[in-house]
Image (cartoon, rainbow, N blue to C red; front, side, top):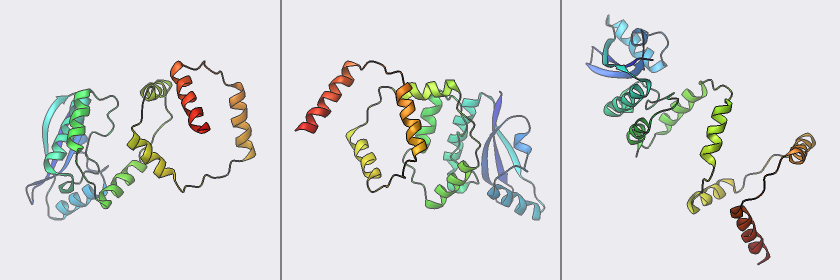
Amino acid sequence: MVCYIYEHWRPDKNLCFYVGKGSDRRAWEMAHRNPHHKAVVSKLTSLGLAVDIRIIQSDLTSDEAFALEVERIAFYGRDNLCNMTDGGDGASSPTDETRNKISKANKGKIFSPNHRKKLSKAASKRKIGPLTENHKQKIGEAGKGRKFTEIHKQRISNSLKGKKRPPVSDEVRKKMSDFQKNRVRKPWTEEQKLNMSRIKKGCSA
């Protein structure tokens, strides 16, 4: 899909108030916008003015558009715009260059409680469908061989302290038992055997 990056400006203040990625007529559509954007449009309408629509760059791939969107939002500053996020949302398989640009734009940012609330609200409205087999495989491959640092382990341990697990029903216990009985167990690797040996030694010490 050929995309472009557009900006919405306030002619009464000569300021950009929104940065977006779009295709076709998206830049000219004002109906399906967030409440903050709608409030600005309503204010301009009451003054007898219209949104100044500016196409910043066109003929972009989806990844290129997402990366540029992040850069433009970072340039103006999220708190000065009506955007609900820092951009780059929805990139299905961004390139390493796109990931680096998004990461660079977001590094060192400390979000205010109000900003976090907006992000949470925006995320809750997204419709997430069931994972495809390909997606599940990618998640599985990404987790293979992953090793946690001691700091990470400590954080996980601290987050679990004091938490009470809900009681497990007999039905759930039976399902867990049946799953274990029917499970095809793979032979342990040498690394797994070594780790188990270390655990047993630690318990007997």
